[in-house]
Image (cartoon, rainbow over all chains, first blue to last red; front, side, top):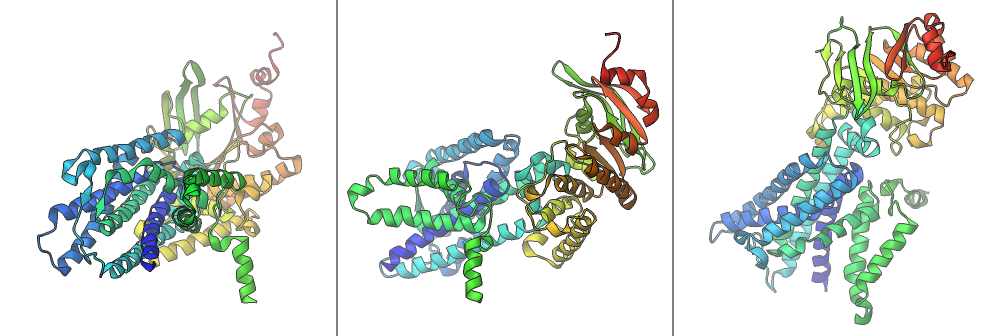
Amino acid sequence: MLFFILDHCVHMGILVILALSLNLINGFTGMFSLGHHGFFAVGAYAAGAFVLMTLPAGAGAFIGATWFVLSLLVGVVAAALFGLVVGVPCLRLKGDYLAIATLGFGEIVRIVVQNTDAVGGARGLEIAYLLVPRSVDTQMLYVGLYLGLTLGGVAFTYWIIRNLLLSTHGRALIAIREDEIAAELLGVNLTRYKVLAFVLGAGLAGLGGALYVNYMTQIEPKEFNLIKGIYILLYVVLGGMGSMSGTVLATVLLYVLDKVVLNLMPPEIQAWREVMFALMLVVLMIARPQGLLGNKEIHQTALWRRIFAKGAA
Amino acid sequence: MTDASAPLLAMDGVTKRFGGLTAVSDFQVSIAAGELVGLIGPNGAGKTTVFNLATGVYQPSAGRIQVGGVDTAGLTPDRITAMGIARTFQNIRLFDEMTVLENVKTAYNLRAGYGLLDAIFRTKRFREEEAGLHGKAMALLETFGLAGDAEERAASLAYGEQRRLEIARALATEPRLVILDEPAAGMNSSETEDLMAMLHDIRGRFDVTLLLIEHDMKFIMQMCERIVVLDQGRIISTGSPAAVKSDPVVISAYLGDPEG
């Protein structure tokens, strides 16, 4: 039982990394990207291919750990490079057009991977266990270790984005969201900052992908489909575009609701899962179109202040 | 890079066409440091188009624009802002969801002397620069009577305060020339009086040159030393307020030609 909870936590952590990095692009910079699953896939497949092709045979623990770290770097750099390649031409596009172009990118990645035999094609990619082999005996250690690493990845992502946002660079990004023309006329270099948001967001999604492939060790192209991208977007929109803590909160809530609560329901209710999930989102969007936290962080909300004030008194 | 002795802004033979429509035709102006120039004209005369050309929002179809002696052809607006031109907008364009203080701080982006890694690792340099920016931004808000609202959302300010914040934000780019697009629009006469006093104060305090569009004739006649009158994209008159006011061409542009 504990194993399953921890396993879900690893998946949730990776989704939090993806949602936070998408929020940087969509929520804070105001560029509507629908291709985040593409960057996730690039990170996962680049890291996976790197391990598959370069890991020396019969590697020991030290080599394994080194290759793990290297694979994370490869995943981040590859996804960031794709962010650059996709970002630069797409920056002239706005709103719906950008969404369609990035959506196209996500699909291209998936289809290219599916037709590339070197990374397993449609059958999927399988890599060796780099840190701890996974067996019935070691599965608790395995999942615990990856939960720690994933939480580290979440903390790293949160830390980078938060520090960026609290600087002149972050203010420039938010200004672009608020009013692109005014921002540019106040000296904000639009191209530089849009590319920055795109590359950093993509790179962090690549980190999520690299962690994912190492944890799963088996991945298939069809996991990185548009539905994945839409789920990530939902976490961002539902948490509040421009709220990091809202993103974390929404990812955890929706994940638990989707994977846990609905799974515990009797099968005849589960058959309606997608319908119920969609209906709930519709209701939430009508009741609270700005998302759970709007563009505030959790410590800036009235509820938090009330609880905190009571605790202090 | 810019030459201090050259005119702050020189537009020569500037024409802007949108498809078949010529919005501005053969526009000419040269603004020296310390001047206070007004641009007037009936609705649709092309005034805002001139501002958009000067600040790089539009590229001219023909003609030459120089800022401090440097040609601005092909430069993006942020580069032109870096050369010392700042502006406000006819329809207020604040960053609504940001605080008043953040609005001003955003405009210091050009002058922030730290990089991305400084921000992520919160280096000493980052902290020092940010503390400096904070002080400068607060001082600017103080000057504009907005310090008390520093932490409010920009959108929550009253209309007159939003206009003031826009000017404060423009000054944060540390410009030499500030272009104001209808700063008194929507203000009553006492607010307009205050604005005039404030603009005079700004000129001295920040050592800036002002170029402004205004529909309020009393305002522009009292404020400006030199006026350029546009009608249908062409300059029809230029000179002192008194000269322009009595120019028959100007009168007919505003009131119609008595001959019909």
